[in-house]
Length: 357
Image (cartoon, rainbow, N blue to C red; front, side, top):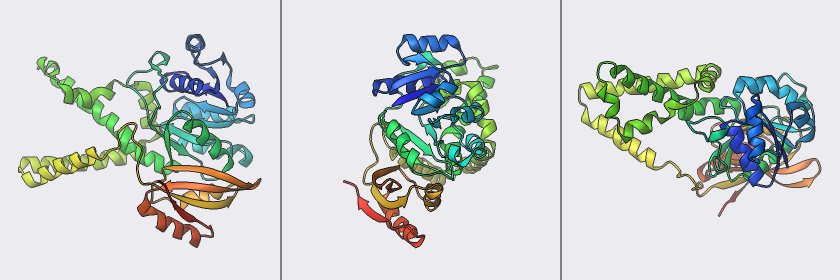
């Protein structure tokens, strides 16, 4: 495919490198001319191209810019025939912008968010394997048909990533806990220790591996994170409330030394931490639910609305029956499959379960 990359920083530059390595033709642009020249010289892109031309010449345009900037650029990116996706950490702003466009234009936008990054920034920090074996969240707007989801799924699969499908609301709520809250907690801890260092200079020299691991992401790009906090403030606030409640409970148990409660926290957290999938290890024992569907606007939204209480690890069209009809594949945990099949059938879809090896 011909891929247009808008923004050639850490994420955009890495995406350009990975796309070129996967055999795609890659063009790009960046607000900093020197960055675009650097990307061209390193062969991450084959030539510079502005957003308007990408919209007409590319198969997919990827907006690798902050969420508010992506929301401003998305209409121009959709002005041609290209499918448009993005990598922003918050999905509501751009989905709201797309919802104001004509339905046939809306249909070519499929939101995205690769769960990969670094405390470093800029094209110089980009690397070809940044996304390898990471999770890429696909976030279709509510009123969306199936045909372009498969194209985006094919592209990101070519980069060696796993992917799952979430609604914009699900995405913003969940990443508040596993991405945005850790950033704020890391920054607050680093700031707390730095304040203590005013009177006790040695404290930072004492910092060992645990403190360094917990505060590594405090070095992340400030401007980017200000945008994220602004755009996902309500979900981040809810996550902070839950975290503060957990810390207050912990403080109470420490003050009274309720050793059983503290022990339960340690053992529960240790067990949960050990169950996190290792990088490069795919989730095991998943089940596929197949649904024959017409390729019409809104059908994907109707189906994903019925999956709101479960995780969908993959979504694709597995084959076309005829020009206006396909088979949608949803990959879920085995325990969720039977209930999902029943729910889909109750709502007029002919779903069936197919266990994966």
